Length: 217
Ligand SMILES: [Zn+2]
Ligand SMILES: [Zn+2]
Image (tube, rainbow, N blue to C red; front, side, top):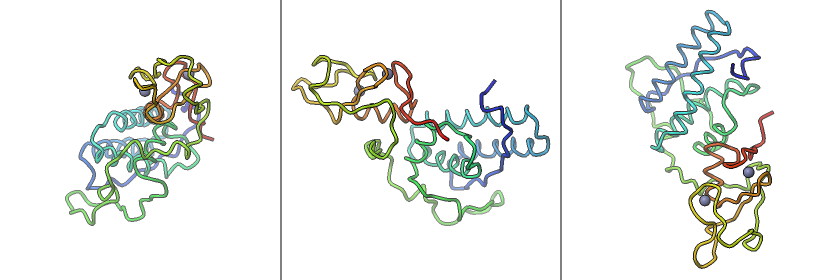
């Protein structure tokens, strides 16, 4: 049983953008079909089907490797979430990923339902943006919990390994690649970029699973 099932959500259809990748359009159309069914018969079974589809959408944006397609997914997630400002449709981690793919303050004001087959208009915001670079995630702008930045001399030992399993924190010259972060829960340490990856993929510690992102509301 999914925990979010306790409250019935007023699901809304969203307009797919014909410029989106066909994989994204397919998931969007499936979402809209499920919403249509739910609106015709708003019971737990139909709501559950939408919840399951949302998980599918989340898996899709996380595992997608093409940045252009990832942004299309992010746009779709934004459109769905915008229609539910008071409800947690998506997990905090996926919303963080979505925000970093698109930047804050975007909206679908110019996006309208189009008849299938009609030609698309001007390029979408997603297509005019630069490729996503994980370094652009500014850790100082994220409300991190249970994580602290430490100095090299605060490491327990000089060959301490990163929680992400990608090797030691310090290189052979004793230098760190970027900042060093430490989980307050289990004291495991992370490379700066490994914290970013961890936030995008999981939002909690690789080792002890304590949350790094504040739960929404
Ligand atoms: Zn930990
Ligand atoms: Zn690492």
